[in-house]
Amino acid sequence: MEKLIITAAICGAEVLKEHNPAVPYTIEECVLQAKSAYDAGASIIHLHVRMDDGTPTQDKERFRVIMEAIKKECPDVIIQPSTGGAVGMTNDERLQPTELCPEMATLDCGTLNFGGDDVFMNTENTIKYFGEKMIERGIKPELEVFDKSMIEMAIRLNKKGYIKSPMHFDFVMGVNGGIGGDIRDFAFLRGSIPTDATYTVAGVGRFEFPLATLAIIDGGHVRVGFEDNVAISKGVLAKSNGELVEKVVRLAKELGREIASPSEARQILGLKAL
Ligand code: KMH
Ligand code: ZN
Image (cartoon, rainbow, N blue to C red):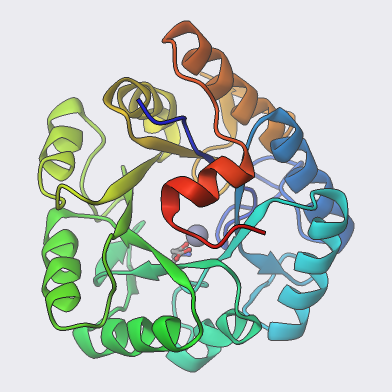
């Protein structure tokens, strides 16, 4: 079985210090959280950025500064900026970090009710536009899917040339408005992707570690982090993103799965070697 790629989604756009005081807003806090995850075994950092007061932003310069600061401490880590940003942002606002030509970035594959009354808009034309920009800028998309229909969208746009093969999916499971996080939901998504595709799973809240375990057993990959979940166990806040990654490493060890280094992750995902 391939080694396990662990992604740490250290920050997100919605989670706040009120949920866990260790959620990073400042440059220094982002570096601290990224380093804790990297030292624990994460090879990819999925990155949102905030202003110092916690306001989410897709500002290119803020991304540049934070990405450079993370690279200083974690030289070979793969940084994967979000192009989802926060609900309500415009397409061009969301695409700003792709102008920095990172190795990877997320590409959200459909519209959904997001966590309540918000609507996270990703029309077919938006997805085509983002796909074209990523091809133009040499970026491998992580295809965020919140439901099965979004896998179908990705397959359709792959056939039309907006997304290249082999595709890499992120099953984001347990968002209010998207698919749930039960075993049958996982099996449904897992069985719906092309045979040459890879996937990672991001379970929201209580679904994080059960879904991580399924992916470890199945040969998939795992995303954890404050964006998705702030607790290390029921009612106990995680001290850092590193603590969440350490738990995945422990589970993988118990289940006989080795952890991929950043260079091994690049090989598995077909990214250029550093
Ligand atoms: N913040 C969500 C509305 C992504 O990173 O691409 C969207 C999101 C997805 O987090
Ligand atoms: Zn995200």
